[in-house]
Length: 165
Image 1 (cartoon, rainbow, N blue to C red):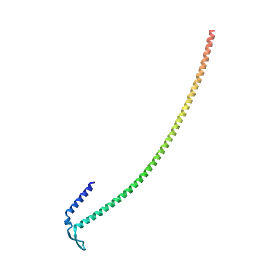
Image 2 (image 1 turned 90 degrees about the vertical axis):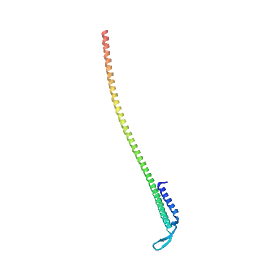
Image 3 (image 1 turned 60 degrees about the vertical axis):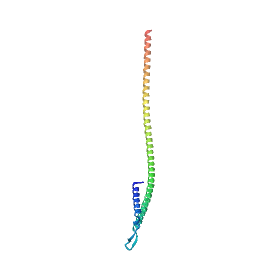
Image 4 (image 1 turned 135 degrees about the vertical axis):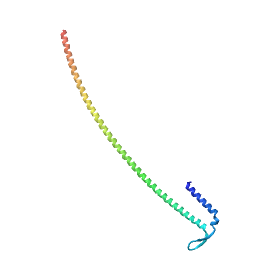
């Protein structure tokens, strides 16, 4: 129970105790004027009934306000659920667009990488071909040099053999 509810309950119980203790004077008949006519009746009873009517009217008004507030809350909850569903749908489509963008980037990156690797491979092959040609020329020169050396060695050997003879 809240502090406010406890306060209202205490005020109600004190008022009820007051009415019970003063029941005799409350029920004492006295002249009551209604401007056009006068009635001899208990004034306390009129006050209690009037207060009870005000209480009932306030209670009905409070219940009506709570009911309209609950209806408004339900309506707001429904709208919030609809908005959340729309936001989730929008978020989902945003994620899909993001994934598509990533896919495009990966495809472009893969294509660029393959082109770069192909270019490097081609350059490497061309370099290998140039090195191979250089090596073949060097080998050819070495063969010629070796042939010339062998030929010179044979001449020297023949000259040496002729001198020895």
